[in-house]
Image (cartoon, rainbow, N blue to C red; front, side, top):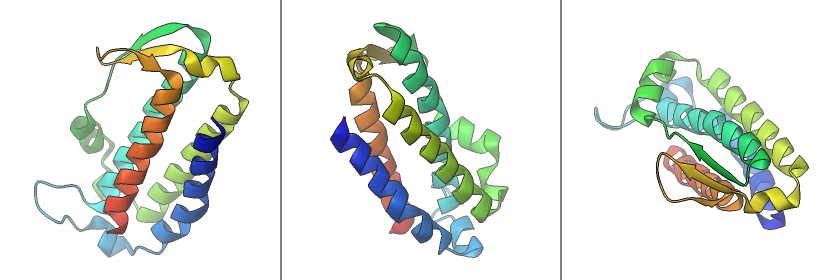
Length: 146
């Protein structure tokens, strides 16, 4: 778990200023009508943080937990991230993730082995969900920074 926490801390140390340096105009541009703008990608990461908050908390209290997935396209559209102000999205993303890091630091070590099934997929450990969350975040931040 220490490696995951260190990785999370590094993301939260390096990404916020890079995100803040993106202009409102650049953040709102869609590279293609069928693809998300940087605002929408960051909004998707906000949705991911919100969903994973539930997972990280609930899975600590049950040896086996089943939770639904979420329809990412619908969530991004319903949240209207394309019309949100970029600095507000950056701050929301940062504060949600700072809290998630805080939650993970407080999590009892044995809870990391609890099993969680998301959206009907085979169960994996909570630790695997945490590692996948960070991988997912890295992937989408890479899209934003490209």
